[in-house]
Amino acid sequence: MKYKIFAGTCLVLVGIFVATSLYYKKEQARRLGFMAQNNASTFVSDHSPTLGDDDAKVFIVEFMDPACETCASFSSLVKQVMAASPGKIKLVIRYAPFHEGADYFVKILEAAKKQNKYWETLDVMFKTQAYWTSHHVAQPDKIWQFLPKAGLDLDRIKRDMNDPAIVTLIEQDLADAKTLNVRKTPGFFVNGKPLEPFGWKNLYKLIQSEIDANY
Image (cartoon, rainbow, N blue to C red; front, side):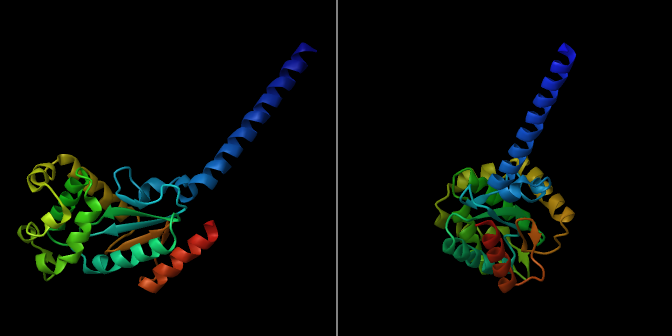
């Protein structure tokens, strides 16, 4: 009799555990949305610069090259879409410095992050891109005249950009880009869904479809 009571109690406890686990996973998926996916870390790394609300349910992941002209042109368009849907979209930047010399500019951006000037620096880079690139080749010496516009301590930038950890994170981003078959920039994913075919109108439609599905 005691064995049956014990066994019955165990079954009840197991049932409660299973039900609780399922509820937790369901609640986590509801709360985290895309980020609850098993492969989300391939899209969003701990070091990834982000812009937008932490509770957003729509993640735009962009594999970006600072020397990429198309990346520069898409930057303001993405921000416009984010402004039109406040709190619903989070932009995540991953690096894919495919252009010659572009990794130098990624190092500057990561150093600027330590001064809380990441987005200001990226904005300055994009707006002055035509002055420091030539035939799709980045020219590092020409960017320094523009960086004061971002409010940076340039001496500190020159020290911090040599941190070996930055090379490691670039390598990680490039490895993830390869895994996701990103061969050119910008490479966009919205909640893990690739932008196919490429184009601004298609990106806008993809973003809107995810907003509609999650809100």
